[in-house]
Length: 380
Image: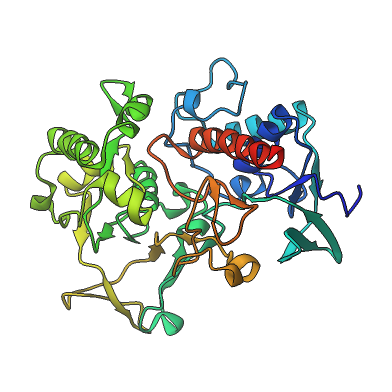
């Protein structure tokens, strides 16, 4: 592999977005190479908790030109997704360089240089597809460092069965928090608490055995105000006024928040009914942690769970790579997604924001758009 082939597009990350990008570039006749720090495809998914199933329907989660095997459930399990991604990468014979950890990206003479493993790859275009959920984010709570109980991030959940017989406090009423609760209610745990600062925008995985996500493309085509109304109305028709059970009101419309501050719409698979039934008790957000294992809530009351799980989201970790180019917001997320920033032409970002359609379908759409844009630019 020549390190001076500036015509080749460099794709960073061999996840679904990165592989979709390389595939789309090939379809446009553009050479590409994928730099992947792991030793095999799907490694980040392999590390996710054992009970994980997708919140997106299998038909909207498949890689380009492929489908999941016959008999795959509507919402594939983590292992089924890994198998699907691996089969795609190997079947397409994608140009993946494994074990390549990108350390820095620089720019000179209208060319980008990717520095990794002591080598430099130069190209006119670089697609950053390292994922928006790369680094678990844990807030700096008062007393967390000396907390006498067990405090973990949702990324370290493991499997629901490991929490049998234990009381669990889940912090965060977003997508990750409800994902954990959807699994915990199927285990004979002790008391379950949900510490919620904001009420969620949430939709059921199924209505009368029909996967709600199959209608996501319709909702995605609507303007914010109408899409917010559809989500809020569906939520209220299914569960009623959930503020009666302690959930705060959502600070804004579900679709508007998703598109503005990237707050994903949560998926319910039983947790909301467990809240209504009292199995899960909603409490205010966390204020502090004590050395005796007590968690102090914002209203002054305390709980003492066996396990506290911070479902507080993730960060991209892109600051060290591209922070100097003015392309990131205050949380480290790219200011553009599915495009290049005007101040950094040729530096493209893919798969960095949640989508109503789901990350897989949206990445395929955006990968095709990026490939076509790169081809147009080069023809000029």
